[in-house]
Image 1 (tube, rainbow, N blue to C red):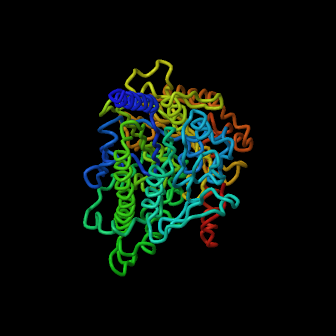
Image 2 (image 1 turned 60 degrees about the horizontal axis):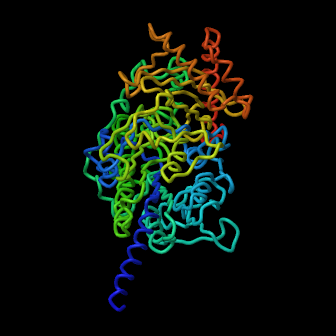
Image 3 (image 1 turned 180 degrees about the vertical axis):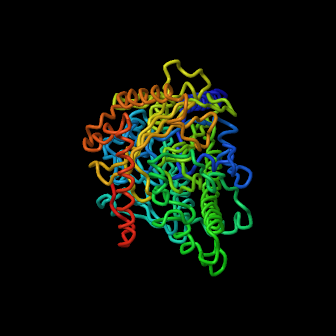
Length: 559
């Protein structure tokens, strides 16, 4: 009998281990999202910054998993993109049109469905959706944009939402967010369930306050500059982005150098980061070209230092997963809520449908089903993220979801024959903050069609309407607008029809803002009368903007 006891113990242990391994068949999910991290600022994407500012921990996901090259947001601005990801719906359906957007408890679909699937859920870092993330089991989130330094986080507690807080004096937000995720994985995660953790960095959102340990990173490095920072060319843009006879070039899109008199990095950065400029810097002592160069170099150094902090913290997070024995049992995604203009066309920020702004980085690692080193060019939208993650854990997306799972594509299967041929885009927040006109468009693998209808929700504060068409194969940097080019009429007509069909398919019928839709329809055909009216609107807007500047009105509520 004595000899049988060890055998029984061994049998019990083997049974327990077998049961545990069966549970482990359901992967954990770690969804990592930064804010405004452009794909071309990740070295795995091979952009102009790849050899200057490497991102080895993010690159690891590409080397050991899959990198997607055609993932796009449907509205390149923080809250709307986050709402799309959480709900799987376009903004005209989830209601988060702009920075006032929110997703109320009970509608935070991804958290709800993950919980139904038996996952322990957590949201840590930048939330930026106003309402309490109550549908998560655990949350620790920044209020609004939050602070880079000495961050305060909102947590669940006895007091009303927003009143229960914890603070991290002396810390940088990227470090504090990672510390909180590591602490939750170590002590908060219920090991009887797989986890779903949304780990959201604030960085590298502007303005770009890096942790002090990175102050010397890239200090003596000349950051490569995009050609379009210096030369746009006469074929770039349209009356919508340049004005009649280029009269609105100073007023459409905030700038790196002195082009935009209302807002530029040349105006903002010397005051915020004087050490990044020559000592006792006075722009009047330098040429416009020199000033633009100074501003660009300061901008990119600060931005890339924040990226360095993100990448280093991911190394810590991955090490914790390895320590817990969960690295290979976790679907790991790295993305950003949208891209960012890094000086292309002398633009800053996001919001634009230009590639650098619209494109999202997307890298995914899960050795069980994703082939290492995969590179995938299928057209993906951020509304597709939620159904994809749900399929990875064996759950079904509810009928409310408009996106479609791309799990089969991620795991190496052929792209379905009925997969989308175009992604949809719409930016609503007309001329807010960074002087971007409202626009709508589609991007196929070969072309991008953009319609700047140029008005706010009520049809007001008009800028000149116009259309732009770019060939994404021969002109990937979008320097030549082909909308009126010889021989392009059939392509234009076909893409305009596809845009109309896509609007119908995603249920953007304009009923949510009828006065705005009236303007959209008014200039859709863009005949000779429409073009003449666009010239008149350009003149009218120039007078309006000049009057605002003369009166010192630099932050007009335009949308």
